[in-house]
Image: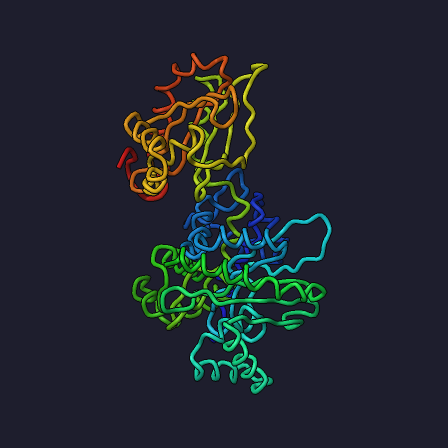
Length: 236
Length: 240
């Protein structure tokens, strides 16, 4: 892929830096990002001109229109998934994620978590990316691809091509359920199922548990499948 | 001070994808009048922060890296509504609540107290209730396209909603809590449709004076709707 533009990336870094919703002076932003203050000033002017930030008494904060920008990310899909994701996570008491294909990877679009007072939960932050072969969510999507495409993808990642091909075949034979343990990270297990929208695959819905609770995943197949069916109906 | 052109290209790509979902590099290059190689670099930069996602056939959409940016910001309507809520609390001297729809629910996103009456209504921000209950919810539901679904389920609700549409406001008593009286009007933002409602909420002891505030409520919600529509690039508000 092409190289990134460092200047543009610094402007995006300012947006991320201001994401806590607090106002900051150019000097504070410059210190926190380690970017020259004159450069920060110029980038803030650029962001201001496009109404990505607002200025008040020499301080800058994200503009209200940012909420609109962030709300328009996969708007229909997120709206269709939300209620069912929340419900599934609540029912199982575990983290539920919606991942979507992103080129040769998958990326987390929604994460539904349970705030419990003290417990070990798996977290897979929104916007984290991983290879299709690395998580149950990715494998569930991989298994929906035609065999040639899937094979090509698997080869492009290298590693244990034969083992992965067998895994994908197993997922196909198992009604599309993909399950992994200690693949994303030691101690993390997941169960996922692809979500279809018409003739294509929108993404996958997965339940993530600490591997110490991996035995529970068997019991989660039916609720997961039910949630996916409901989401597919909402998307139709 | 001058702006940074390269950074501006990245922002323009984001704006273009916000307006036209799922675009190829070539399409972006054409509509933004920026060379393909520059668009490609901007896409690579945005992709590095998951602010765009690569979908099928080389098409790009806005990505989840943007979701976190908006999560700590107040609802846009809250900011636009502030001066109107101030006017309304000053004239009514009662609690004013701003409600927005979220699926089947109404959520209070801002409130402003109107006086130091010993007996007053306290509202919690984030308080949720079904759209079909309470004046603030009904004012929204009546002007939503989805209201038809709700109306088919309940003839009584259909009647109530038709009445709200005809009057342009709604008054309810004791629907959410006993002794709580609510006068609410929809915020109609032109082509955006109904975006929320403003409600004056009082204890039933002061219900009689509530009607004196009706004209002011309708005036402020109309103005707020027009300004919100304008902020979204639509001139004029009103019913449409």
